[in-house]
Image 1 (cartoon, rainbow, N blue to C red):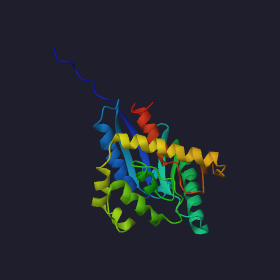
Image 2: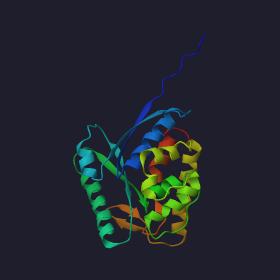
Image 3: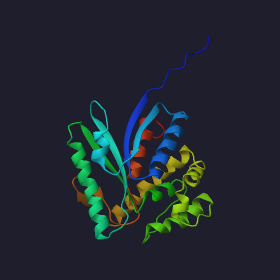
Image 4: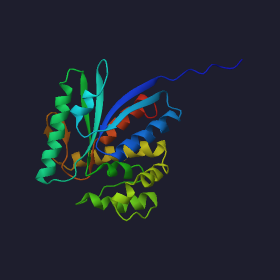
Length: 222
């Protein structure tokens, strides 16, 4: 007698993200998990929206919900620093809209491209400008992009995603955790703002924490 296959539970996750590459990545990850041996299915409500308040106002949810916000720490210059702090201000405002929202910050210093590189290799060098990521990207993916804009063209970016699988995602989480542990071991200042924490040193990132939670929820890592 044929065994009846149990339908997997679907868990929903919410993301507001800074740019298209973050959205494409999350769409790719959702499909990757849903076509794996994960213990559950996932559904990502992800939207390119730099303003957390605008994102939350558009949500129709009940009960306590965690929202992850992916945003880049692009520079130590004062203008970028003010913008970075404004994003954290807006996350706190979004939590006070009466929708039982908890915002979790997934920043990347300098950019989300750091997180992508970590899927393929370590990236421990401290860069002075975000455009310098093109060298490790080309090395990691065996490409010859002239600049970051070319890498971020939809077809090019998605071609790089196709070169990876879940083992790369799991490896990226491990590499990212080691970067943050090394920052702590080096005695770097962990800045606090509105309850959120971040390092000004590059590289550093917390975008991996959201992905780690999802992988654990789906029993893909322990």
